[in-house]
Length: 316
Image 1 (cartoon, rainbow, N blue to C red):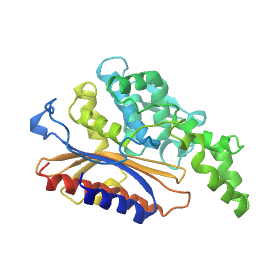
Image 2 (cartoon, rainbow, N blue to C red):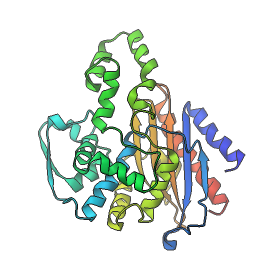
Image 3 (spheres, one colour):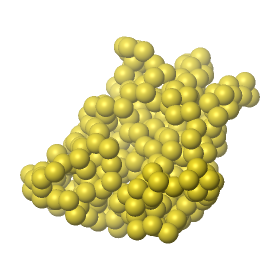
């Protein structure tokens, strides 16, 4: 990566008021199959090996393990799971808003998890496939900087518990009647919460996530049917205001977004140009609570666009 490109990426993050790490890699063209083992990948990086909080990006390896279990016959994708109020994760979309128990197949839980980032679906799948299995797959792929330390409910509720509440919902209810000074005190300490510290909670790096995407796009992360299913569902994610905001049709973006507590905003995905060139991108940002959310979201797309433009100028 040239110094000028590095400065441009860093400038995008600075202008949005956030810290950011990035890794963007040129993938082998679809017709070329796997990359020659002796050929070093062409990448643009900024803090790519810095540990970060993945937030809902961690749902990508959960989906890969679930789809691999389906493809290998270890789980029946049609198996039904009943999800009632006790299983629901605090959220603003999907199953968390349901009044009545819902019965969903395992394979449709993957759809909910990857398209609308449904936390209840993610935790149901994680219970079924097992945290150890997800982490074992990550380790087997050489993604040593990535770890699932907790499910989504634990990740969210632990934030409330760190401030003396029973969970996230209790913290939100308290915040509604707290004084401005009390809320400011929580905001000041929020970034140091267990779930927002990659040394304690779920963790990854931009480089690890790009490696994972590269493997998924080469059918090398698991059974080919599993990789194909994950690729297809990433292409149907509803979030379009982060990576996708940096590109215009006919460029296609298949991605998984993530955010946590107004501090972490991330997205990883693959950007496909009509000339056949493709780029795996991972962008992770961090801000103090109360930052300009639209500005940071747009910065994720702009930073990726700067990196992709750099690689395309190199002919990659």
